[in-house]
Structure formats: structure tokens, C-alpha cells
Image (tube, rainbow, N blue to C red):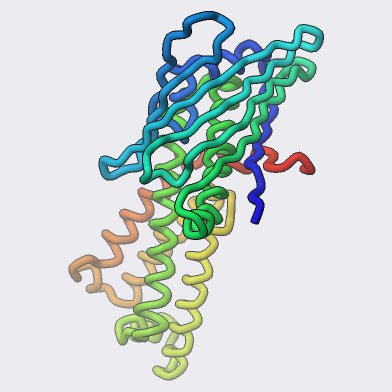
Length: 302
């Protein structure tokens, strides 16, 4: 089955020369491109030779992939645009990618530049490699698009890539934490266990009979699971943080009204909710203007 090349395009409010410099200078390129940890240019025998380079990508847990590449840049003087063609690969048998080709284009548009790339690659390991690539290829496209947005924000707003990635990954960790907490609190104590303390607190607050309180706790658990899922599905994370900044003090107050002695329990709602409340404030601050892959076009038809 023929694979679809990866395509990413983004408008940048800057001249072609600045975008070219930040993407062709290896010390600058490796700062914003999530796909590479380091890029080293090798000496050329003559100016007309392709620019050979070595790259490394840290996978994590002490593992890294090293590879080679060659690039050739051309400049169209009539419209000011530039093109850089690329040939790359790695001899490492542990790498899914064996060899690939692509290009970068820098198209002059008014006061800005349309920066785009298209590339494709061959994979190892036969049918198994192609199966793994069905998940890996979208991840590579996402990483490329996110990196392009980081570059755009670096050029237009002056925010360094490392600061952008710190905010991005901090926001992502907080997002998955809240997803886990809300789904767990809704599913385990309320829906699965129907914990007596959950039922007792709701019955105390609402004067419900026990059977009705058990059903209501299950409904509340379902709503908490849905809210947990919204942390993965809803893009405007600051809205969710703001909602929690309001809700957590109310939840703490309702728990104290239902069971005044609950603040003496180990791992009680007072300390638990206070921690989540502070984390929501931090998340609200960090989630402002986070880089995103969705700002890029991912196909020529868009």
C-alpha cells in the first residue's frame, strides 16, 4: 500500500531570509525542531557540493537515533523564494526509518513568508514496519507541524523555543493528570464501588434516601467521567482551568458541610482540593497561547 507523504505549511510574518536562517543554521534549527536533538554540518570540498550533515534524535531512556543527510538550497531571484531539497537516512537497524527525501519551500508572500515542507521515507521490517508506521507517520506529521508553529512564534513574538516547549509539555502533563483524576474519581469510588462515604455525604447534603443517594452518586460519577474526557477533547484548556478554580472551593465547602470532621481524615478533600486548585491556577497561566500543530495546513487541499 502506497503511503501518503507528510505535508506541513504555515504562514510566517517575516521575510524569507530570516525564516531561511533559522531553519538552515544548524545551531538555530535544532532549537525549534522537535524531531532533532542535534544537527552538525560537515565540511564541504566546494561551495557547489550538497551540504552534508549528521543528526541525532533522543528517543528517551538513554536511546538515540543517529543519521546522515544532504541538503541543496536554491534561490529564485525573480520572486525571492527559496527551496531546500533534502536526502536523509540512518544505518541504525533499530530505526523504523531507513531513508527518505523531501524539500522545504520558502515562498515570499507580501510582507511575510509561506514556509512549507513535504517529505516521505522508506521503512524497515517489512509488513510489521508498515503497520508500525501507520501510527508513527501521523506522529511525525504532528511533530513537524508543532515545530513549525514554535518557529513561527519564535520569529513573530520572540519567545525562545525551549520556553515554548516547557509551557507546551507542562500543559500536556497537567491535562492528562486532570483527565486521570476526574475519570478515576468518577468511575472507581462512585460508579464501581459506590463507596458508602460518597453516598453518606450526598445523603447528608440533600436529605435523600439511601437508594436515591446511591443512584445520584452514580450519575455524578458519570458526569465526572465526561468532564475528565473533556480535558482530552476540548481545546481551550484555560476555560476548564477557570471552571475548576471556581468549582474546587465549592466542592471543598460542600464536603465540610456534609461531614465536618472530614478535614481530620488522611488525604482528605481539604488538602486534595487545595492542591488541585493551586495547580489549576498554574495551569491557567501556562495554557495561554500554547504552540499547537493545528495552526498548520496538513495537506495541499486545505
